[in-house]
Length: 304
Image (cartoon, rainbow, N blue to C red):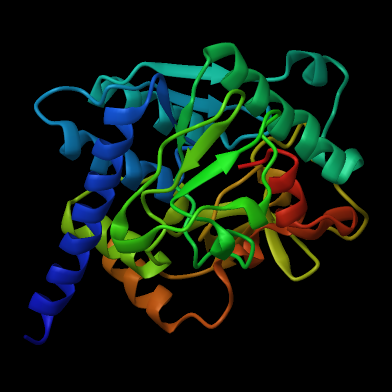
């Protein structure tokens, strides 16, 4: 088997695996939920869930943790996606942190903990969720490569890599002790290229930020920061604020997510560009190493 047939078989195998994981977990879960950032991975994951449980709606809500520094177009995409597919959408934000003015310019990793990690844990506790679906992939970053598909979290949502369970022959252990929860990653074995190719195969609409268009931006440390809200942007002397043809490979809070110069304005163009890329996908996440912090340390504290 060669050419497109080989690619199609590969994508359908990944889809089948993700569906199997979702169905197995839902069969065992007491109260599941799916995290939804409206990024490409969570959008593809939610589409797979729609297919896995069709003609019924997926038996869990979508949960979005709003850092209060999200791209406005991403929030619009989030709301439209949930409405179109009949999902219950739960949005949670740290309103105390918003009132205190916690922001990514002044507070670094403290901002991530206060506005992302803490409200995530609060929302999960408030909902009483035991199984939490997320769109993380092993190829994204070295700490995520350590994750099992079903990743147990101890009380307080603490992650301990050395306590992860073996998963032989695609057998998944959903049993939890008192106080434990589990993060479930149905797309663990997918790559960035798989995500784009699958979206093209299934004709899945994705957030417009992933496709090139003229965007108002400044350059900071080799990255282009798209100024989503000029009133809240911290401009610096010498900032060259102008329109550039940019798109994103990864999405996070707009002041700390770098865009790339690109001519890829549609999915075929993005697939081709991704296959030729030499830089890491997460190099766009400027905040990953802020204040000496690492993604693994954030995950140990409860970050997804």
